[in-house]
Length: 369
Ligand SMILES: *Cc1c(COP(=O)(O)O)cnc(C)c1O
Image 1 (spheres, rainbow, N blue to C red):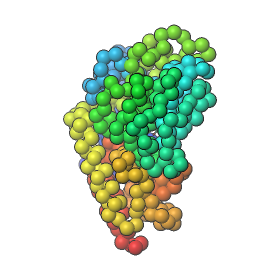
Image 2 (spheres, rainbow, N blue to C red):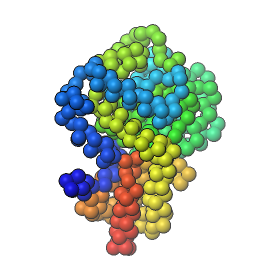
Image 3 (tube, rainbow, N blue to C red):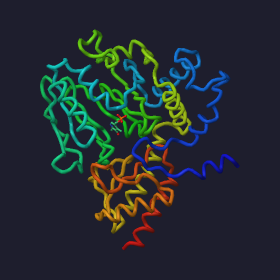
Image 4 (cartoon, rainbow, N blue to C red):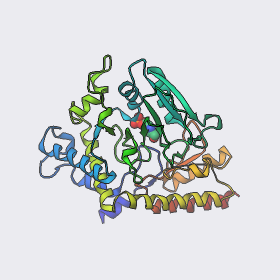
């Protein structure tokens, strides 16, 4: 009964991040909080070199490799500093310091930030962008004009703020593709071999903020010390130390590991993708059928994780957010940079949560039409 009661107090959280986690995972973490696996300590209190934590991080890596199907020759690293520190580490590790060159596709707030940071550190070229259209669509990527001496091509595959998804990876003309997957990580199967590196901040789809999962093709990891770059910003340091060069975010990695096991128990990423598509279809159909709400992203580029929409009237938007919150549907306000509304419906958002949102939208429209 207590368990039922606890569930009933939970709201549907549509935050873009930190986001909702599966109740099953939170419950397991709660059950194991005081005594993890008979150790008499919580995961927060144990040595990162203990047998118990070694098992946790090794299991997390193995489960992730299995879920995605990561081929031989790729390293899996658990890093910290958030996704944003990768905006710096990527140019510092993969392009020659100061003189390196890299190409960026800029199609929303996160790729724009990565590009800005790239420009501070190397010669970063913007080779495709939809900024002139306020990032309402993915730019044309059909014939990328890659720079001959570029060391990589950078994308953000799912733009969290603008709700855009690159559904077909571009032909990068032989250049290594580096991708920020933070807000679509493990939402669908991917072909890992298409990437030189992909990475994700945990707080969107897999766990607590701070942890970053990075998967890097081994031959890209520099083998020599990079002069002038802090050791902890060099992927070599983390790869050599198996993510244990210093104390990693142990508890966060443990939760990520529980999420990986949970996704496996659902049947893997094909199943996860079907669930996500069903949720997204329900919400987008409601938006498209509505006379009040409008989606802001071009249909062919719509993300199935982040769904931005507007009423066109800031007062209605504000009232919608307020009344939705009172109804237990929280964090529906659009990002401060774009306004309007946004529902993030990551893996852990159940179909019932989207159903509740769609019913609420319908009521709100009738009352305000
Ligand atoms: C949230 C987000 C980030 C930033 O993550 P931090 O952990 O806050 O640095 C970067 N990229 C994308 C796509 C995101 O959604």
